[in-house]
Length: 284
Image (tube, rainbow, N blue to C red; front, top):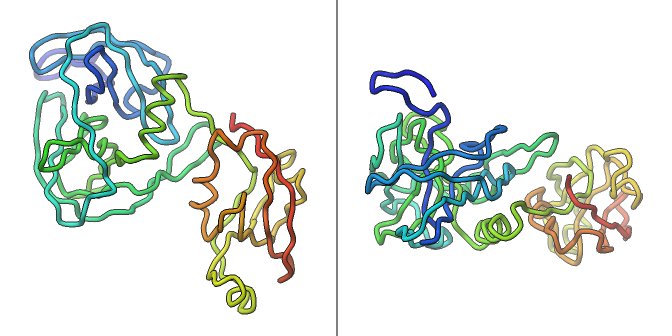
């Protein structure tokens, strides 16, 4: 707690969205980061209920809480895949501790990326929503809602004046939320490479009808990539039968289903195609 003009307020105050009447809440992982796995949630009807962190995933900046109550009014989840630039959205939350605040704006851009970190692991959150709805400290974890009242994003960051970012509600984040509710964590596969996009050589571009791949910049010692024989300057163009044009493509493939499962990776080494067998491990 800290002292303020309106009395003592929680240091880690943020916002959340009710997922189910029996007490599951959705918020941002950074709102509940730290050793304290418990807290208290205040609702617009005046109720104050204890909660515990059911699961947190810093690499998607999402967390699920379990409140000690029932009969809650759950929010209706939408699909950010249907959003369009210029569409009206409303940000709901508790900025600066002012409960139940609402600000309106529009979707100013789609498809943004936001880096997230957990220990040494870094991941890009894809398809982040950019809005000019006013966001302030305390809005994090709150709902970004479309004109039909459907939650299409979870407010996560203030990137500047009139520039707010929200993690989208889509198929990928629904899977994350489901895993957090069920298992308390999200399992991801791990290759052990650092890379960046690079254009394919002209011949390979014509043959594969593919403009870019991922150049391996660094291979982590002892990683699955090193065991498979990947080297610096290799150009990854295909993984597990899926075309790879950028780092995001690899990231999207690193799901739990690939952990300890042998997959084939196609690289261009010195301009020549080479197929390697790789067994991803669990990211820990």
